[in-house]
Amino acid sequence: VASVTSTGYPGGVPSGTPSWEQVARHYGRFIYTVAYRLAGNHDDAQDLVQEVLVRVQRGLATYRPGSMEGWLSRITTNAFLDEVRRRKRRPATSLPDEIDRLPVGTPAADEALALESVPDHVQDALRGLPDEYRVAVVLCDIVGLSYYEIADSQEIPVGTVRSRIHRGRAMLREGLK
Amino acid sequence: MSGWPAGAGPTGADTGHLDEAISAYLDGELDAQSAQLAYQHLSTCGYCRAELDALSAVRTTLRSAPPIEPPFGFIERAIRQRRRRPVGPVVAAVVGLAALWLLVAVVLGGGPLQVVPPVENIADAQAELEPDQADEVDGFQAGAIEFDLTGRQDIPDEFRAPEAVGDAEYDAGFQAVGRDGWLAVYVLDDETVTVYQQLGEYEVGSLPGGGERFEIDGDPAWRSAVDGRNVVVVQRGGMTYTIVGDADVEDLIELAEELPARDDPESPSLGDRASDAVDDFLEVFSLGA
Image (cartoon, rainbow over all chains, first blue to last red; front, side):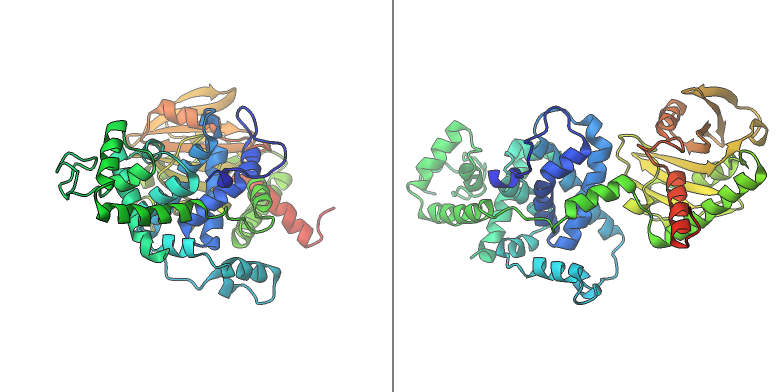
């Protein structure tokens, strides 16, 4: 789990309250990993990261030094669930995959194709979970938060966290075989 | 059932097995006593041991999944986009042309553009807008001003409003291009706030009767209540903002303090972006320097 949070960016973790650009650079891969695991594909992950950066930029003044990963996880999952709710209210007509809309042979299309071609049975399995279960499992097993931290970030009881993690993992058993 | 007191286990359930407590046991999330009971139960219950092994394998697989690399250059591109906050091509054209018109009007007019804050129109329109429908609205008409709802719903980046709500999280919102300005509607909890931004200065005589003149951070402002809604109009750095809401007037003033001046590079408003769009427009058509 720790590997997700080590970004490998030079300069180390920004001390004190960093600027939003420092957060984006240093924690970009972390945010992207969480966003991708939640959203299920690179197109939606990129949209989600953009939204997270907006919220980080806007909310950094309220950040209190502590677990930046926890804070970013909360923002990312909230943005993800907001988008889920928005889509439920206004179901979009299904668009073709971004790959299909990109002109073949362009760098963007090649990049998208390369990304989507990486086999990822973890992602395939996660995609099949109900959103709330996926959030709980991602926060626990991908981000590495404790049940209490998840409960705090999602504003739900610890018992609900425990239940969602267990049921989520149980549902993943088949997919990960 | 072996070894686990019915109803007394970590789950409180009566299945006789650990059930949800297995994951909590794996994660070290049981208290010492429950963990000890779970350990004893596992030593005698083959079913729960098999469950533990299976869930442990799932957990290990998830935890050993590598971080996902963003597409090359994605983060830097995202940062640049957030810095510039570019408008989409269609909006750039609309906003750019509108700004060009305003720019020409200012230059040819030989003085600051005079605008009329549509206070009553917006208050009327907002009164008809139910907070829980703000993000479902199909049209927003304020008196004679019909807004083109090019960017309603949860405000995508290219329509991001001026930093009108500070650090507050809004539940819903949309932005629209009006006759002579740009409109943003936010829903915060059960309160709806509308901000209308015009490029130009207002005259007090153009405002409804009553009300009170005051200053916000040294900028001329005016406050009143129209149709039961609080209204604040403030002139800042060549922009006129009309703020209408069912929030306390003090909240609206606080919001007004957040609104950017036209030349505030740290917080580019729609007007700034409009100017950028004009620059781009001139550059594309080789009209610039």
